[in-house]
Image (cartoon, rainbow, N blue to C red; front, side, top):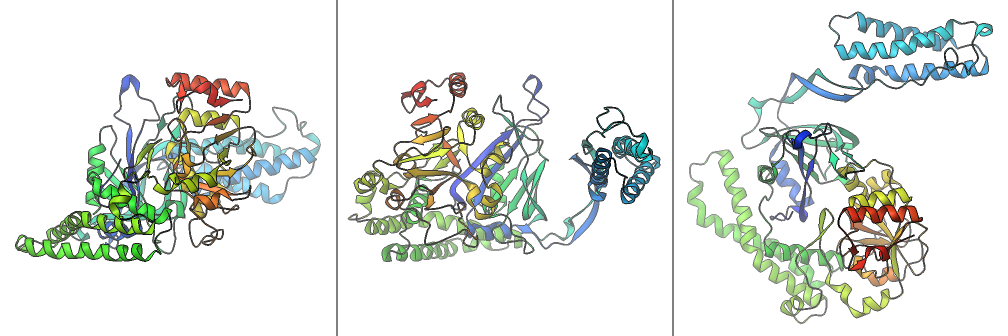
Length: 593
């Protein structure tokens, strides 16, 4: 979706509906979960933070909390780790025919005593007693091996009395009472929202490989680096924000900076309310206008074509905020009487409305100013000539589950000539991964795969890419020959992808670094110039934000499946989707072995 106000990266947001992991019998969607996901521009962060009561006094409250996985008493005291380590040590000595160490016996005795105390404790929860019973069963077997003299041991391969069975952690879903520190509602300043911080996370969704449907229970999360804000929006709505500026000197990974989740209570149909909640966070929550779209488009040209240093563009960018300020003064003088008698919270809303309306009113002049500057920087007579030129398209295109903006310079004959004989490819790690891509219909970045519920480990260097910022993008390579392996996506016309305004490239492996503080970042090596990319050596990388739609106009010209079986699988998937042609070509000619 497109959002106005200029607060969101690319003015875009994504509404995702996750099904209930337990299933939807008879089409019941009462437990489905909806999430509005977007990234904030760094300049918009101050507006959001102004809405948060981040320094309000807190108080401790006991709350009922549903957890999935290991119980706190287990993970906090490392019961599973101790039992697993003891079993592994005993198995080692059973196999070698050697004496079991005293420290192992001591660990077994200590852990057994702890678990028996839990079983005997009338105040212990039922789930804790079940957990204790699970581990005690293993400990009894371990103790039996310890008590057996070396000469009387059963053969190591004896399934009943020899090697100990693998110990798995006890995991369950249960409700427990926990003490949490929450903002004191009586101490929250007017106009601000109850806010806490916690270790950063990601939504832990799961993708059904057969249906392509993602599910999430609204609670499960995976750990991430840094810290994040958790905001109570009222009526069961919640926001989770990972700031550009670190909380408590603990920054989030670069690929998550500025990421915002607005979460609805259980059930479907909350889309309008989720968008409306952006306004509660001081962010734009209305539809994008054509003028705002062109403003974003022009700013994307400035970055993509490296125009910020051109004198006319630099002047326009410095003068644009002054137009906003001038219009704010005009509106303030016109509406000053409306502020009389307003309390602090209402005055804050009044000022925010003035700021928003001023930006909207000044927009046409800002667009004309920047369009003329970009025209001058790119060799056009004026803004009107630029707007009438081939390739000028100030509206985004739908690509997979996101939107992309284009750049107008890639249609240039000189660029087309430089790219002649080159092709872009993405090497796929396995035939199974390729089949999975066509089930979802997209080649998705590490961060987008996480949102979709795909497991980690599908890409290369995912951890390093999160730190560098490369995890926001998919990685491709431009070459003159084949050099793509037996399983790959191939674009014979590089301009198909290079017409996008969101890509950047390195002539070498830099983990897609976009964070200036990342070790692999190199400002002088990073480029967005298609002519420069055309001259790259074989070990290059081109990053495209979010991903690539494999089934639409951006899809590959050829797909190498590596085997006839994988080709048949993909053609069957396309057939089930009702797709017979890809980019106007019969699918059977695009999908090859």
